[in-house]
Length: 128
Image: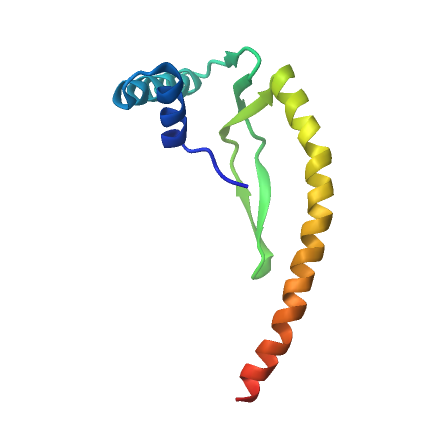
């Protein structure tokens, strides 16, 4: 699986609209800046068919250092952004889940086979 970057998005939109990439990049950046500014003002951002971004305050909670479990400290409440997918996105991603489950099982088998193949090679390298 790959990652869709802002650059990929700019190139794709530029190819579809036949606008210069610099102009598309500016529009994409202004869009992202506007979303960020709205969230910084504690406003919800609703993008129809995509989803809703909203600012929420987390509860304070107790944290522990795994290296020193006897010591604990309070993690203060803080503002975070929560994303709630829209109906169309939720439906499209839901269709993907069955395919991912199917592929996950086959990937585990492939990885197990690769590890089994590499194990004798690693043992032979240690003997040398």
